[in-house]
Image 1: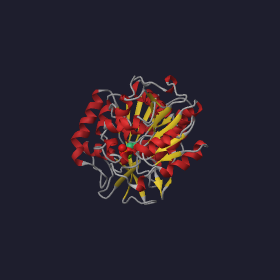
Image 2: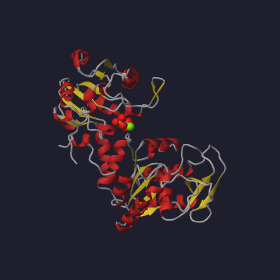
Image 3: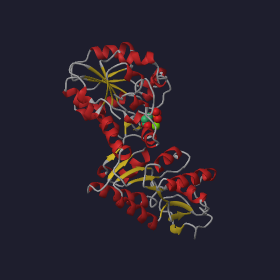
Image 4: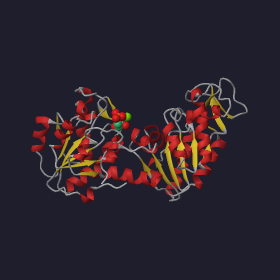
Length: 397
Ligand code: 3PG
Ligand code: MG
């Protein structure tokens, strides 16, 4: 994988169209998590320092080609200005007269945020005409939105063929870390995959078993695997119709030398409620009909921690239990802390991604000790599935 970075771009006095992902969580019209704003700062500040005019392009939510006032990007201009410690102008439309006038008024070092790209149907249609209207506003294109790179949209794909195109610093950092984690990793490589369903992570599991030496499976999807092996899972979440698929994945893993870790003991409760009474049960031994598996047990956890200690690289997507409902967060938190401490002492390259996963790492207070935490949800998953991301392919030099 090779792509051009800002190192190769001539930017002074130029209009740089920078695709960011400002699809940030909002509550009551305010940004409630500014991670994605912060992720864009290095690129924006570097371009300003180097004398470029920075024009920011982003989508927000899913307005489906219509102007939906509640999905305006305008409420992001002020928080962004505060983070940049510089004014951020806003244009009411991302193409046409409002955008053209706002761009014409810019000086070197200025920052302009354009209105939601998805107010135009051409964006999601990857329409060349719409991409041309965007491209007309700039002299070069910088893609700093890895978390949107799984979408072939006008602002992530078509436009990259119309202007000199570069990866921004956040995109570059994401790609470099992901390459280190799965592209050409230091072995042994371990994966931790959790979450509710096998069906949503099927492609990911199939790709991973060909690349990893250890794969710990947790969350609801582990129940499906145990059920597929003939074990009782009580009243737990389980996709019975995925049993054949689960068995195929286990066979494939064995053939390819990937050691799968499934829970041997589990935390069970009758209901998923904070502080609900719970006990430890052993798989294949003492599960009762009403038991719901909500976390990994201590023996299973110890096996996961041992495998982490033996590994040199870790890639993590999905919690091991119902981490939002304590005490069923214990397994996820303990595993996250162990990975973080190994990473901190330089023994493990630990990379994580996906909305739930990142929330779990923050809840465990260890996100900052991971080698890298991706800003991406869907794009991180598709990358773990081994798919080519259109927004990345369009940058290939
Ligand atoms: C995300 O939040 O995952 C990205 O911004 C992509 O958003 P989308 O799923 O609406 O395309
Ligand atoms: Mg999404």
